Length: 502
Image 1 (tube, rainbow, N blue to C red):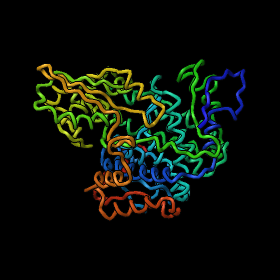
Image 2: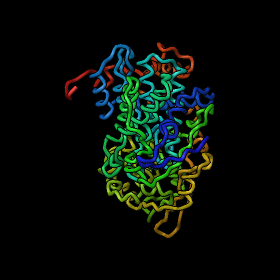
Image 3: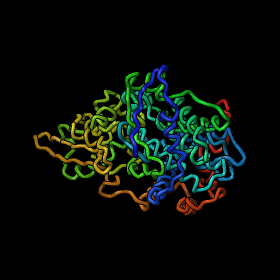
Image 4: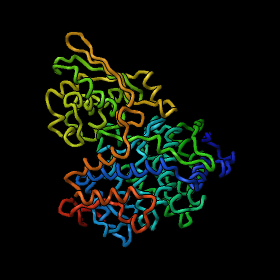
């Protein structure tokens, strides 16, 4: 890996194109290196993972509405949409929109945390949609997704968006655009312009993840995927982009991030170096914000030492800066303590999540968030006894550059009314690659079967799994079938309607 310093250049100080971060990312994207076997295997795992959570959410409101919008944009030989028949094709940007929303809705797919946050699996819907529309093979798709993961993970390592209250899709969109460029074998110049366009149009505020969180949290990465497809399409037609998008005098760094004196260091693979960033990412066993994963597992252990939850005086969670300020009491969001808050808000409240996990000893992507569950009197009482504090130890582990040492856990101190304490800590979730029970192919397949049980037929489950596990050898025609279908009778918004504009 090579570290690249990125700073603002006044207009009078010329920065050659070849020295710009977007060009360096484009060069990496167009470097046709072999894909390691481990990387191929993990890409397949994450396609299975995405399909699992997408189908589990297939009839939830935001997903059904995103699908209804895609239905208004049919295209012969187009991309496929989750739940719909493989006989139906759609314009790829709208397929990316529908499928991206389905993947993100339950907050249960993969994650990478460093200087900023990310869900790199959000690259899969737009890249796959373009692959299906453009007649790409399974090998082409593997190459594109390896690039998408590589760019997003390394941007997340180097550039913090959260500090300036910018949403993390600003790193996702250029990653997807570059992944599309790799897959389609575009020349470096076109990928460079697509990356810059994607950066320019994808900056937005973090209000989508603050306060009363709405369904836009699921739509945001889907919107990013749609923008990435459109950016690639424009540059393939010869259009350019604002340049230099990162380093310019009026660039995103200058006016949206650290300002005119800002400087960042972004690592990228050197020429000929394999793209392996996906191996640093991790998925979720539980449907909740990633920084709660280890705490849910820890709650399952700690509850065994408690005879009467009503005798708990208070619970203090000692954790990292990010966990305290994003999903803890440090956020200052009263909605995180409100039993009438949206599901999207509750899955970003570690106080709620820990209380329910402690009481129930299990976690369910639907049952753990129902209004009835959130409103239970004894749960509300326990929930309001929980607070978080930042502990430098956990902040340091959160930012450790060594992926084997990086940790997103906490120490929990439960104080009982009699003054006794129950104290325990966990560094990583059980499902983490360095956790007690790391997810491998059988766990991904089991997650798919469990989440789609009663939704997808056994025959369709097996058809999809056998297809995706042979991804490297799939022809363009076979890749068109890489989708999970439902009986239309089980699908909300299965046909085009006229509720909106389209």
